[in-house]
Length: 494
Picture 1 (cartoon, rainbow, N blue to C red):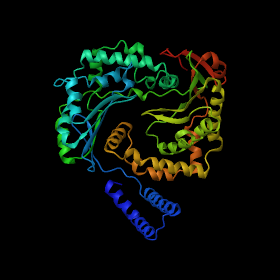
Picture 2 (cartoon, helix red, strand yellow):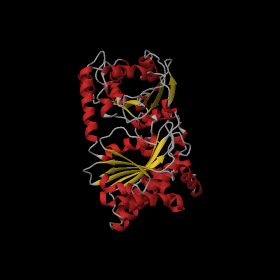
Picture 3 (tube, helix red, strand yellow):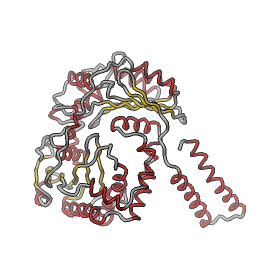
Picture 4 (cartoon, rainbow, N blue to C red):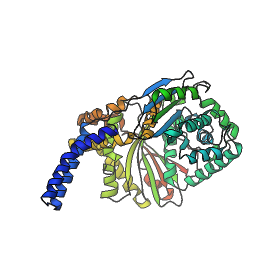
């Protein structure tokens, strides 16, 4: 529902409430009892609006330039702002043996262009209150920008310059590399900052999904400006990339502008999907014990293979995971935080990628509570498999997920990001338009099938970071143990 629709709906339901309020005032009924009744009635009507109006993706245009660049345009006139989201096949999976190269290349795009220095670019953007950020993730690199619609010509020219004419200044690159190395060193001081990379290496083995996004100290320290230039030339090509624009503009006018701006971007060789290689599933339960001598806590992951983002049961899986560990009142959080006090919080999540993904239960606990916390997490997980969900629990999760869904796609920035995600992962607007329907259709029996199919039960993989001397015997309970130091950057897996 757009903003005007929301206003109308709210007025339709608030109007009778206001009349009630006037009656109350006239009769001088000021007691808390009557105020509570009024408030409860308003909440009820607002809930009715949310439940009766399924969220739909606003209309958009999609076209492809001759050089292969896919463009999405979505008019959103409510606020005089424009948001841009661009995506490129230039993530960490393309690093090869140079882990961290994709990340540094993405950052270095903003180190100046042929027509504008880094400092000048920052000043121009700051003066008009615009933002422009570049980043790299596991699979892709991206650019996000937000600015007033009146400044679109200025900002779009800068975006074009950043993408087509970066100079990769050597001095700025050296500064950025030093910052990256300091960050990698500091990350080793906090288990929660590095356990994800250890888990990915342990689970994915020699697959490119094991590549750490920010690299390793040993690889980043060797990177040079020429490496960044080569990576940019190879992977920042229009074919295989997409740009989404949402906000206050005229679609026909914007189509002409974008076509003129990016038509000179030379078509390249679209990078192959190096993640197509099948992920080898573990054949036995295993434990990676990461020693941190001064640790007072044990941080751990328990999990296994997950799902790809295009999985047809994605929505159903999200609903069920909400019960297990996807919200504050989840089973895991209740048992490990509220009922036993073993940790400050516990959660479970799926990390879907284009061709595969992972599932993990995550938390941390005092060293002395390591065994109890791991066992309790496993107990809760086994409960999901053994007893499944009852009707009341499933209904609660459905309502929660439906309530959390629309706010994820309210702003122009969120919508632009959604469009590029649709491009990368290959799903369409039916994910949005049929979301409530797909949630409502999940039954207790279907949920049982989903749990059995997608929530890994056997051959679980454990990563424990803590003082190895104190938890080594405990780790051995759960599978064959591989022990490394937290400073280690390469590990042997199955």
